[in-house]
Image (cartoon, one colour):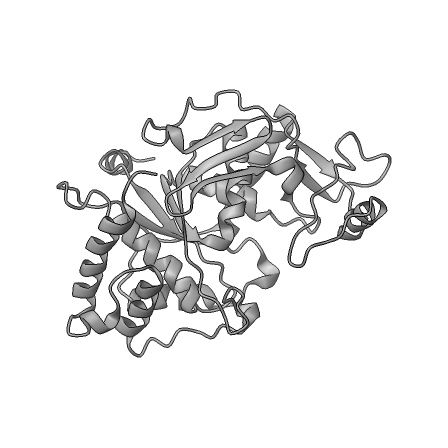
Amino acid sequence: MTRGEGAQREATTYQGRFAPSPTGPLHAGSLVAALASWLDARAWEVGHSGRGGRWLVRIEDVDTPRCVPGAADVILQQLATCGLLPDAPPVWQSARGALYQQALDQLIAQGHAYPCACSRKDIEDAHAAQGHDRTRHATLPYPGTCRHGLRGRPARSWRFNTTDFKPKNPLALIDKAQAATFSIANGTVRWADRRLGPQAQHVASAVGDFVLRRADGLWAYQLAVVVDDAAQHITHVVRGEDLADNTPRQILLQQALGVATPSYLHTPLVCGANGEKLSKQNGATALDLHDPLLALGNAARVLGLPSVEQIHKNTLPEALEIWVNAWARTYNGPP
């Protein structure tokens, strides 16, 4: 870290990020998350002589089979067209494997991670043998088959051991303003979401021992995002509501690795015609940015901010300023 970087970090108490996966261009749902995270950073301390926080972009391309060549460049251009410009050059997860390996090695040394030989079918068979039905779209909790050894089978992946996890220094690395946003007790992680309110999950029973490195050798999302948020000193995470149930797993990893836990805000989702989250797998089309103000206005409406009809006479920078002030009034209260 250079002296200039250190001074810049000390000059702000807010560091946010937008972290898209380059599986295709941004669509209406992903623009909501992008706009929300940008507004949250820019609205930081508005009205209190604050200059706003820093907003970063991270390309989450660790799941390489799903990534589309050139999609990251398209996403960055879409953001620029909408006036959502990051405060530092974007980073790519695919270039950060050494950091993830270092974190995995730390977890192994601490006894928090273990090798697993199970396939998805093995997990399904284990649940079927116990008479458990699988809920649609739900992931079956890992039954802990390999927690105490591989029994002669070859390792396929690495998992985080969620059983009996106790943070060594529960709040030692947490800023005083964030100290009340989460707790871990009796296997249950509780945290305060700035929009959804109090949340809780018993990770061992809801999810089980989750994957850190996949059977195909790729890094799992949970480990990569925690390592990157820590490395980039992210203080506030603003993302879609569909990712809320990832938060307790990430809090466990943050505590195991001895890094700070950010404040979380999960935004409303845009749904498709079938009522399910709008996604590329659910028929989402690329954003039409011939009129970026219209696209942003639609995203702002989802967030409960003034609609484009109310500000259609304004330029894009003027509209963004209106939304920054509206965001500060709507979302920037206590956790």
